[in-house]
Length: 256
Length: 349
Image 1 (cartoon, rainbow over the protein chains, first blue to last red):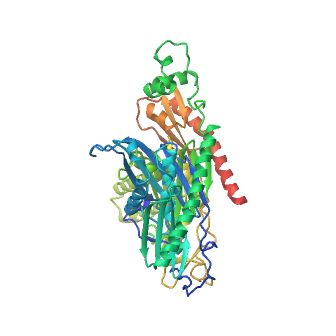
Image 2: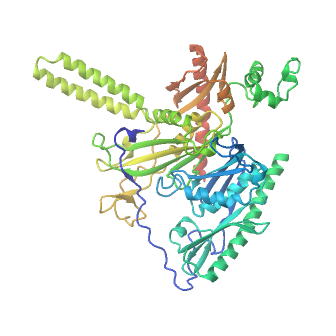
Image 3: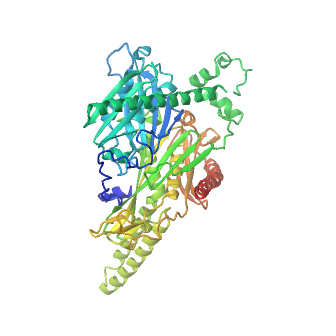
């Protein structure tokens, strides 16, 4: 609180130095290596664990590279008083960042657009009619942002919902692809995201082979789109398996 | 659970869990009579405690502390500021405590938790010891007024006394800053030009009682994990990281100041008072049922830093307070050991 005694001093981070823009991607420049040494079509190893927060009805922790996310699910519980009557359940999502999540302090505390994207990605997978008149709250906190934050939040949230015993058609897995010049890189890290030309995020229910959300930004050519979507679908399938194993492990551990 | 079946009241007919929800106080009373708690702890024992250092790579120092299922993530990020004119060779620490909606069903987005500002104030009081500063400046002021009233007669005498007062003030200010956990002078980079501002942010990830204890432990652990980056002054008079800017030929400003010395580390224990019972390290359930809490903070040499009893229905006798302090003294030893183990575990890696 010392800072608040006087007028709060203006501070700056010492590592704000201009980042040199990375290699310009010439045609078919495939010699270029990703910052963490992965192949272009290789995802980061995914780690999931359910039951991270005891006071929540369900929760999950996800870690992909340096992206670390916690999601808690509360409910189904009474909807807000001001809400109209509804014979299907409601889903309420909120995504926030810790002040130290981003390289520059306090860049994103409340992410309105992420919250609504999360809502839309999950909505189609949840059987809302199974909890009429009530609300399920999905709260996500990004502990450390290391790139592809939203896809990680979405996958983690669907695990947390499963942990809370909310009825769903299937788990929701999400993966993003960045377009860098002529190259497509899957599951981009923060650095790659900062100089991408376009990005695509696909969230799907792997075992039903249904897409719940698909977003494009930036510059894309049609063949690239096709390739990127196929890449995402394959990756979602694999991610879905990892998530399923995590749930199975938790279930068998609780039986013992 | 240790419910006696002999008593022929309602409790035998109702399932244990339902009984716990409907008659929480009676449920606890039956446990307390047996000197045991529902989670099988004796009254004076704290829950299992773990510390993991370096939980977040995007901060300069971070730690995750867990007491039972209460989880706190603390991280320190160092930024550069221009020190104020009054204290040109001192840095600053800004402490923030957050309870995001993930941590508890009570907290909703957009509506901050009631407990958060209370814990935040306690934390900054404990870590920065502002109470100390205030008391001493009050003493200074009193001395000043007293001397002024004495010396209205001779101007020469007055000058001499002002010298003495200045000296006393200096001494007081000096001893002030050496008594806190962190010497703010250590955060200075270039006197009058640049100093560190340490942003300490503590996030509650799971709230299950004893919030302040866990928050303080994580804060202390984050500071002991903190590694200050090597920086140097660039041509624009700004402080930048030495490696990044290719200024390796320049002499770094803080070559030998990479770790912060923590003198007298504070540790705390919260106890719940209920009738004559003292329950150490309460869970959220225990805190809500028995509303009188006492928080004792001792430093590593068992000196009292703060004692907090925010009202409550139980009026504590001196003996109860003394018992709380004795329990805290034991707990400080445990916590010290856990912190040392966490630190030495980091060094091996």
